[in-house]
Image 1 (cartoon, each protein chain N blue to C red):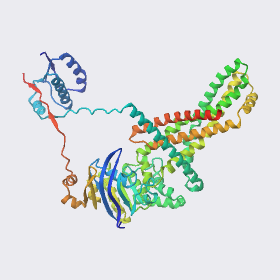
Image 2: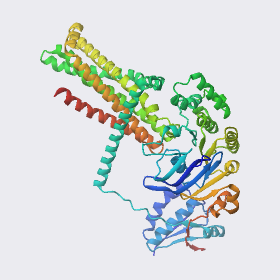
Image 3: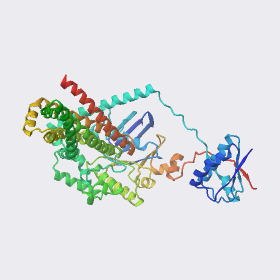
Image 4: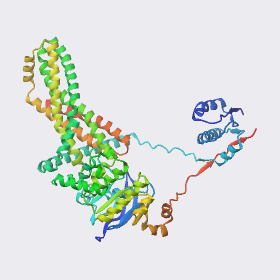
Amino acid sequence: MKVQEVELPEEITPDWVSREHARLMADAKGGEIKLDCHRLRKLDALSLAWLAHLQDTLEKSGRRLILSRLSPELKKDLAKVTLPEPVAPAPKDEPALSLRLGEGAAKFLVEIRDTLVLLSESLYWSTAALFRPKTMLREDVIIQMVRLGSNALPIVLLLSTLIGFTLALQSGIQLQKFGATVFLASGMGISMVTEIGPLMTAVILAGRSGSSITAEISTMVVQEEVGALHAMAINPVHFLVLPRFWAMSLTMPLLTICSAVSGILAGLMVGLMFFRLSPVSYLHELRDAVTINYLIQALIKSLTFAWIIALVAINKGMNVRGGADAVGKATTSCVVTCIFTIIMADAVFSFIFYY
Amino acid sequence: MSTALKLTVDGLKAGYDGKVVLEDVSMRVAAGEIRIILGASGCGKSTLLKNIIGLERPLAGTIEILGSKVDWSQGRPSNDLMRRIGVLFQAGALLSSLTVGENVALPLRIHNPGLPMAVVDQLVRLKLEQVKMGHAYDKLPSELSGGMRKRAGLARSLVTDPELLFCDEPSAGLDPVTSRGLDDLLLELRESLGITMVVVTHELDSIRTLCDRMTFLSQGKVVFDGGLDQAEANGPQEVKDFLARKPEESKHTGRTVAFNLEDG
């Protein structure tokens, strides 16, 4: 049988193994391997693991690993060495597709149930607070209103203005073909008030405030802060959920109004600059088109979206298990679930309002 | 139940995710006693504590705290019962967004919204002084060391004047001096306030300082219940080895690798 001879260096380093192992195995081509160890000065954990691996690999194919000219000290060290028994990897028990689908559906239903329970508890405690005003954590509500709502105002205004600008420009060009640019105001008014305003604000707040709520509450769970609240007989729904629930419920409609107004003003700017509309005709047309019904629709939508964001974010945060990676996963999952649910709810509202 | 007993656990079975961690655990804690729950890592000490203080629902068995049964039939155990106990969590579990003073005031602020703020403030400062943390009233938890956080957590758990105090690994992660200081503080509190304490720990120095009686857990079962002297003299070998810091014998089975050696 062919014997591949290799001289080992003074020290077997990770770099040396990474470089030489594959080359050694390739050069051996089914033959035996003889390692000349006369320069080798020490046998550390890496050397032993590598030599044992080489020995096991060759033995399995009926070949031999020969260590030649090993110093007497290293021979003694080698004789003392015991290596852990090789452990066969546990067979992966992959559940069937139907089982995984079932589990996924069950988890989804549990999540819906938990969110509805949270909603009922929030409404219960909110009502209770109306009758016992001292139990209402007013300061906490104000702090959360600033953090979750007011601080989001600049980004809501900026994005709504840009979207309003784009929407007005694109629809204006189409309307111009039919000489109907005067209807730009009504189109902008209705779409910004009933659709773009609530939806845009909700998506921004889902990404900004929803993720912040989940990250904060899940970190509190991981650091046993929520456990401490239970141990102090403090209901986390009362202490953590209510201020955020109220803050979102109060600030979301206000932000939606700001979003719609900024989009409409962007439309006015486009009308003045590109389609020679007068401010008076734009505002006159707008007043006629945007009726109180549309404003009520916008209010209902924004309040529903606020509840979706608050409850989904809190639920994701409260149910986190594990460490830092679980916090990250819960935050991502919160944003995805919020946006998905908001768009679903928006579709349902469109059906209810227009048919 | 006798009024002299502050805590009774009978036939407790506990676990999570379908895995049983504790099986048939029973113990009785008398008034004024410091009971140590100890055992090697992973033996179920923290699970036992979480079940007793109502953070997890037992699979079977009964728990009575201060003469009242911990009842899960209507959801979480009653708030009135939980208000009569204090819990010191391993890392203090202070709310990071609140100052130390606000953290300590929290149970009072929530449970007694009508209490004048000046009274709450006075009480909070008193409790902080008791744990030698008066200087940290306005500090945030992130500005405190591990030992200081635990002291602040202790002040919060004492603010409602509990009859029974649970401590989860109070000296874990602390240097020996700080750890001894915290143990001495617990002893002082027992002397001055007469609080019954249940302390989960595996720190031998703390056990020697604090222990009146101990419950030794091994693989989810109670293997010894009694005093420290009794454990060292007549306890099971496992308990004696633990107290003598004798490591468990390795179950590792190695293999020798027969290399082919050549001299030439």
